Length: 80
Image 1 (cartoon, rainbow, N blue to C red):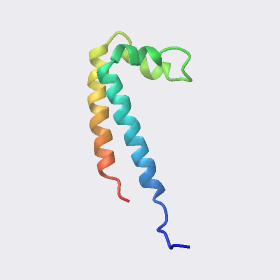
Image 2 (image 1 turned 180 degrees about the horizontal axis):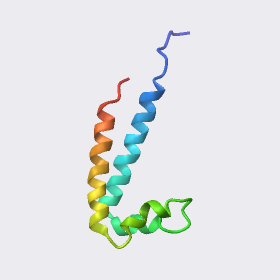
Image 3 (image 1 turned 90 degrees about the vertical axis):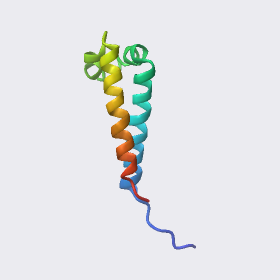
Image 4 (image 1 turned 180 degrees about the vertical axis):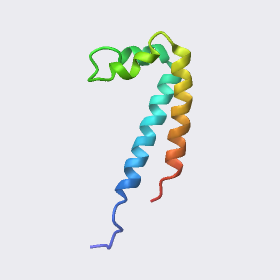
């Protein structure tokens, strides 16, 4: 059996979080009203998180830009 290096679970978790942030940010940037509406009702507690964005697509877009930038930064920090 080959002597493989141990998996970097911290790096994998960081990259998964970055992927989520970038994807969620893109959806919020491109379709802010639809994205917020999807999570606004009976969505396992996310109603409170999206409440500040209901009726404010520009606010959601601004948050999306921050989310994408943070996701890209986080992804750039991960090492194999």
